[in-house]
Length: 224
Image (tube, rainbow, N blue to C red; front, side):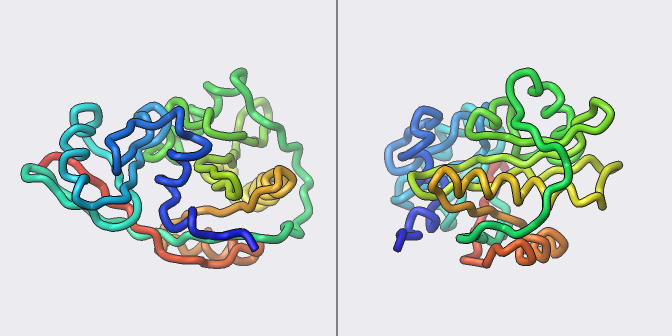
């Protein structure tokens, strides 16, 4: 049985594992480099004050994921709650669309779609963290899904995005099915995070076979 312990602190786990090269290291607090993701995590809460001060020299605002950090004077914090969901089995969902793996040729199309539908968490180099897949219609990229945080045994499905003019066509469920299959073929287990208030996507993920594992807390930090 594969241990799920890395999922308890997924940002930390990926930054000491698959994505160590994209890490800014403050010792017991680590962050992604800003071009890749706005997330950090810690293993020792006593070190979070100094790390926040140092990281604020690079970014105006950023997230610490997991337990609530200690906040230095002159900063403010806002909590967001997500659900972490995991799927251990292949998804039984037919795929009728032509799904392609995106590469550098598609990068500008990817960022254009992101700016319309998912601008907050996706950075200029986020697509370097894993494979991204998409659906084109009339030479326009209209839906994507990809991989973000990764460890030896787990890969996060992220950026489930459909252009607002192309929703309701089943693109998301087909892309999730395709991405999860690719992850399982890589001998890893797919997981994802979703806002706890985002009922529609949560219901979709459950129908596709994802089960809720735990709540995950995102602490948005900025100067007061």
